[in-house]
Image (cartoon, rainbow, N blue to C red; front, side):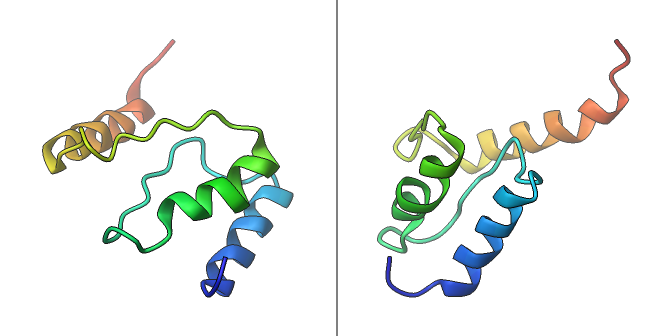
Length: 77
């Protein structure tokens, strides 16, 4: 992957420290390297399944997901 050395280093550090978030949304214009970043840097280290929702996601859905995540702090089990 060409460029994005700071981002790659930060992600590798999060993985090594076991502090990589359980949920991430990568945002950027088409061709900016989001999928490449996941396939070459993140997935090999974490052995993840990837769900590409590029063609189905909307800003409203992202907003709803963020609201759910924020509200998880208040769920008592």
